Amino acid sequence: MNAPSRAALRLASIVIVGLSVSAQSAFGQSFGVELFNTLMPASGGMGGTSIAEPQDALSAMHGNPAALSQFEGTRFEFSGAWAEPTVHLDQTGQIPAVGPAIISPFSSTSDTPGSAVGNIGVVQDFRGLGCPATAGLFFATDAGVGTDYRSVPESNGTTNELFIISLGGAVGAQLTDTLSLGGSLSMGSAFLNGPFVGNSAMVPAYGLRGTVGVDWQAREATKLGFYYQSPEHFIFDDAIALREPGGGFDKFRNINMDLPQNIGLGIANTSLMDGKLLLAADVLYILWDDADLFRTVYQNEWVMQLGAQYTRGKCRLRIGYVYAANPMNPNPGISAGGITPPGGFRAIDYLQAQFAVPNRNRFTAGAGITDLLPGLDFDFFAGGMFHEGDDFGQFTHVNVASFWIGAGFTWRFGRGSECCGWQY
Image (cartoon, rainbow, N blue to C red; front, side):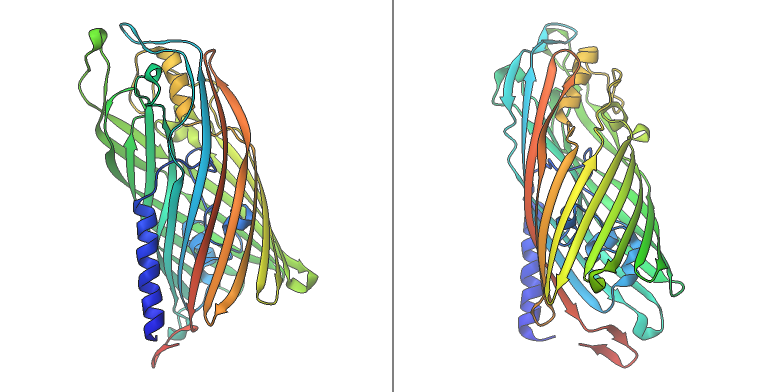
């Protein structure tokens, strides 16, 4: 590798880590709080479709790891994106505590700013060593949400910040000419502030998550993919002290939170236009009912992702559409994550409003250029989530909309390792 390439790699690493560290957690395009592959460099332009035939290795490692076997050589990828949500809350009734009311009626747009989000990965295949497998390491932004109404006195300091990043590894092995299996394991680092109104601070927690997947070449131009992703459990120690009668606070308590189990099924086809047109569809099923804290906020959710990519020479044009069922739970109960806040159902309705993503329709578009420089690919994507609102109980209403824009680079180096050494 020459000196300019090494310098470019170092610069890319610094940029992406900087983006990740500086990120604010306000992701309007998420499903519940999960991002999946909506902000990956190529999949981002195709509505996140990536289960059967992903167009970037980051999407394979972060989604169906079996599809990682489709990538050869050595690859370094990173993407950065900006997500800008608008969340407006109308609270028309008081939320009583054990003593006096702690939330009074107000109407305000959240002050939480947009988010700089980063993903980074490196991949190596081992076919040169006689092993039909590809392995990689990734750093990815998994989930996030954020609202901030502290500038409104009636909100009594309402703020909610959740941000989850993961560091993991993945491997995809080609067992036959048509069948690949894969798996990944990641360590998630989560940071939570709120979401209950009380005395709280940003608290970290850590969890493990595994994924297993299958990728099958069903026909010459058709691929099918499937994956199962395990839940990820977090315990935020001493995260919240709730308000007591007379204005004091109770002892600090733990908040239990899970990212849910996820099931994904995808299909991709390249039979049209002499293989230049890729059509893909993914179905996701998100099991919120089994996830601590979020089982109160959300119900199980279906997501349909549709994407297309047209290749002409070095250029690739992409478009995507996503329909996501409204995940908001109509029967939330009176506790969440092991916490029963004062105020009963009204307090839980208010809690749901901090995590509200009722939007059903999203559109994306993108473009890519291979060999922008020798061995360097560039991808660009953008998307928007249409304005939609929801009611939580009698007194709480939320309107949410967002847009996002991002880009990514991929460095490709040869076909992989050979017995006589690295070949570039």
